Amino acid sequence: MLFVVSVGLAMKVHKHVYNGKERWLVEGRINGKRKRKFFDTKAHAEEWRKLQQKDTSISVWWLDLSNSERIDIMSAFNRAKEDGFS
Image 1 (cartoon, helix red, strand yellow):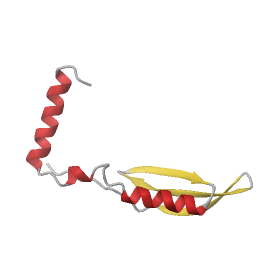
Image 2 (tube, rainbow, N blue to C red):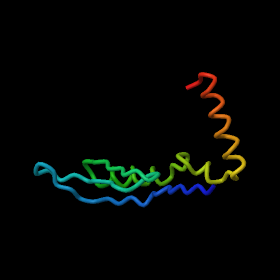
Image 3 (cartoon, one colour):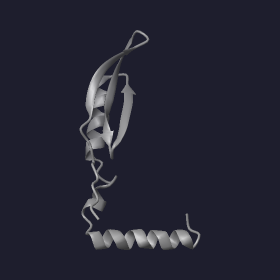
């Protein structure tokens, strides 16, 4: 079984005009999901984008595991779920 996980941290900052006000939009994909966030200043948008690129705790740990380690984690999760843990 092959697992493909896209960290997808290619986020871009765009100028966006909404109701006549200039806003800054950061958009991109994180783990395959589209993420959009609006800011009042370009500096805030750039700062948030940089923080998102530094945050590798989302799924990078999973990429370093071997297939047998992944199977062990999933089976332990399923056993815990059967025992009533949520």
